[in-house]
Length: 125
Image (cartoon, rainbow, N blue to C red; front, side, top):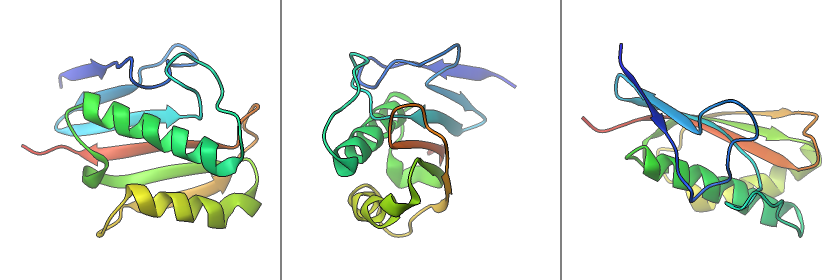
């Protein structure tokens, strides 16, 4: 199986030794995106500002992989505080239309930021 590494300067750089995404067998596996700018700086403001930046980064990586969030079949959302669940849903609705992908949302001990999101896309043939 051939796999292709995806890299874009339009999203936050990886925070460790991993790829922003890998494409294999027509599927794009997008690594977790955080509320960091493409320059590697944490977005200030409230939760919704951080959530928008994380989802914007996910959009940029999806596009670099040759796809879009419309092709997402599964998304993982990691929240530092489950009290932000309703606000996350509000932001989520701006990025995903029907049929929305399957989703898992869990609380996580995120280091210094409020949200991280990852996704799996099925790319068009």
